[in-house]
Image (cartoon, rainbow, N blue to C red):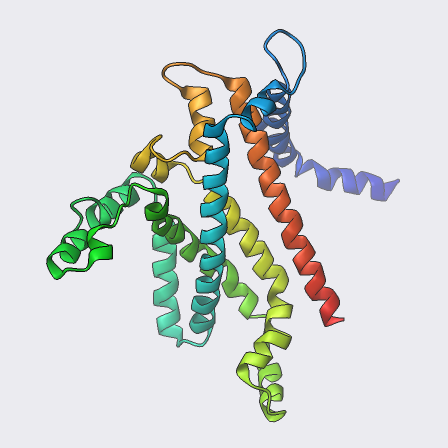
Length: 282
């Protein structure tokens, strides 16, 4: 009985946090879920989901968001892994300087980031003009206001955050393991393939989940850059709630549920990969 009272007293300190979760996460989620199945006539149905998966504009938006999220996540994870690896081997002074730069660039988003990329790679951007004068065709014809052109912005989102997330994972790799591998004539590539990466796989998969979600829900910069010129799922969702012509919150809720299901699918896949690596280690 005494332990029960002590536990309740401890739980009392977390009550404000639990209330925040309930009112800011669970209540809006269940309201959104109910709206997504509402047909507008007081009945429940799948009409909004049928419209999403039969109308080309929504299918293209989902396809574009998944494509740019997957590509930026894969390439971003590779770059982040190499950057975090080099950072752990760097000197203390260089490490501090680079971490400060990562913290600075990770907060550089929204309108300032959009203006920076327009200045550099827009129609009359600095690099585009340099490409025209130097005769570099791919740079002179670079189109920032397209899906492929925006890829560099999404990749920019991934590098600072992914590197900062992977840095603690490299501290799990002990120097003694590397020294033992060298004594056994194990190459660096084989060490990372057999020992390093399997040990870091939970952290790597967690980083992949974060990067994918970060790219999938990115809204401000793409909206400021292309508005509805390039169909993307977050922009379509926002238009359903704050559209100037017609607001359709039920359809926006259904699109939000579809986005959530995509995230859950990716989370399931990464968990399966993590379990396969853990079984391989055993």
